[in-house]
Image 1 (tube, helix red, strand yellow):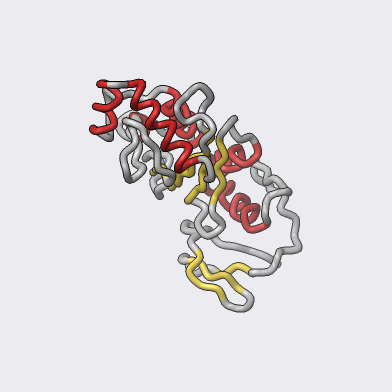
Image 2 (spheres, rainbow, N blue to C red):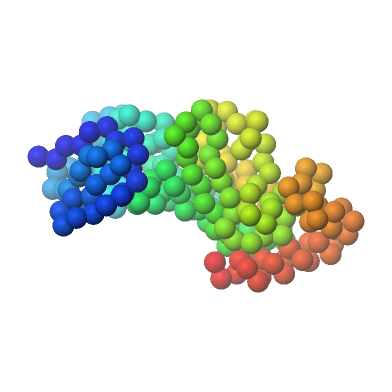
Length: 210
């Protein structure tokens, strides 16, 4: 009989021969369970998901249905040009890839990002940053993003999907009047054509093989 208690943090901290130990000190069997993953909650788990992910979503749907719905939608209905999947080691951490929008300096690029849901989510915004280098006035050299909904304009009604679509839109419309990288913003305002060419060069150099 498989059972699991309410686990708030799903970070794996140790593995022995038959169990995965979580920070909550709850142990779950390491072997694939034989029971059905059909949920009795209003949110159903996609049976095609990896079994560890399915187990997580099953439990998540009981205690955090909002987050479970978002995660399942990201996996089953990805937005065009965007993919996001939770890490099996910590399912509040998402591996994200965004394709450079057409007719933008980033067209043809594949940009890697990381997204983390803090414990307070959805009352506080996700933490997101670019891992791929990018020449953009609203993104600094550490990959941090100047986007209002990640700061003071965040609302619990917003979703991960909204955040990723907004970042994708930011690639289509850089805003040098609200910069995070002052030097790139100055370049963009003083000689936009040259700045766009530099952005294209960086895309080819850093994002073409992501």
